[in-house]
Length: 395
Image (cartoon, rainbow, N blue to C red):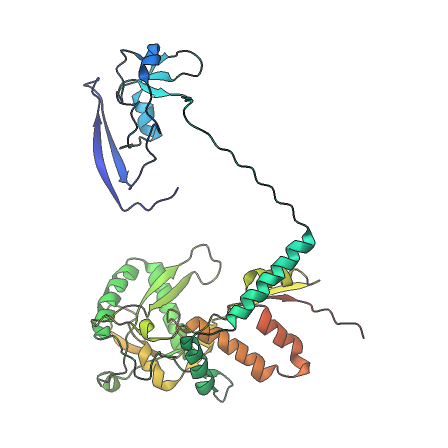
């Protein structure tokens, strides 16, 4: 059993039998400690060795809830030397500073204990056949798209373009032609930025890493500064995203990643993500990818660097991705717009994978690049590719 701890309290434990005993401890509050104990009423009269003992729980024989579970650090403080045993199979009484506590088994004849055994016998051929039947069924189901998924596909196909360098440019797929945008998003983003800034200012290493990432955004032209005369213009097509760092100390690379909160609601209860289409799931089945990967004589693993940021967002949609930033508290807060697909938007995974698939259509549609097309379409899991040497068929 697992549970989420939402609160705790400090308590003092006293003994009914030892006036000199007191224990301070922190108790974590959960809905249920354990099941009712004992499960059925017990007749205590049949255990003569327990009669007239000062018990820590005088009503132990009556089913009831457990109110407090003491940890071993408390148990070691209350434990005393006295132990009282009866006939084999009967409870043992252990003396503690809270009174005698009982442990040991209790058998009853009025309950039925049930045991189940299960046996499965299947041949490898049957198992493989069932596996592929299941895969075919899932594939057929995935061919049926919802109206919103069809709209996302249509928007992509009708708006995707490429610049002179061959970089793909995509549109943000909105649920409607006139989306409702979050109100007062700048004020909300400003409050959250000030909170984030206080956090990163308290950590010099984090501040340096954050600044480095933001400088990289500007250097690579993944975001641009909004000029002051432009930033004061009020339009109905501005959305400001708050952002915060995610720290992954276990990673050898990309220990610090900036996440943009496109799910933050404005004063009207609307967020950018609530108006964006998620698009159909284009992720391949990881199990299938791994199984195919293991069939290669020589295998390789690689990933696409900054996959989202390799894809530009069309100019008219970039103002939906504004942020506030400054490199030091001594500077004025400036406004920037993100020019690429942004991590944190609902449509980002769809746009990234869809663009990868589009590369296979645009650049690998000939027999010369058949292997590359096969790898793009079937060996990628998000930005990771697992493939290998493809054996040529005999002539």
